[in-house]
Image (cartoon, rainbow, N blue to C red; front, side, top):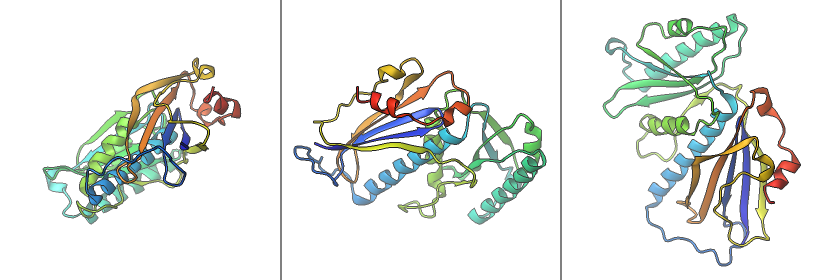
Length: 270
């Protein structure tokens, strides 16, 4: 029963996934019965895919000491529309680009707008934070519209929870609460793309094993993120999937750009 095996390299992480596909013969693999409506299942598919894309972007482009920045509004400065909120973000980003350029730094960001259940408005940004810049300079770019909250990224390089958080709170800013599509975030154009280091159809195996592990040749330098292990049924295809992530230890940022070697790939099947 063939299945698709993929590995993505993103910064300090390797993300593995196995799933059956309608593109290949699946004799003996049965679909689960549909349990939810088409609109609901499509919403879940879109949301999970958006979360994966954002997670990989965060892992690839940001590192410990970079910042999850939250900008909120004073009551007197609260925007009246989504367009006004977007204009405030554009003004902040313009100031940030100018600030970074004046310090000979490159500015990278991912931006999400949030509308809370009670109507509170926030901007969430993940930004790189060079040592040459201070918080006060960034606060000044918000021009007194409200408070700024600085949350340093942790040392793991695995920002799965942050991606999930941002996707969850982007729901309120979609053009229509029932829409199946919508722009959940904006980002700078200089972000590196995660690398798909393997996509392989495994044809000579039976049912794939739902086992997350670190290959022996990688045990010294990698560990399993136990919270990343997930299995389930795809809402649209109704076929099973399984995914997990490994995190590299004792690694400098430059080392995250090393190529994934053929030897390391082959060790996964041993």
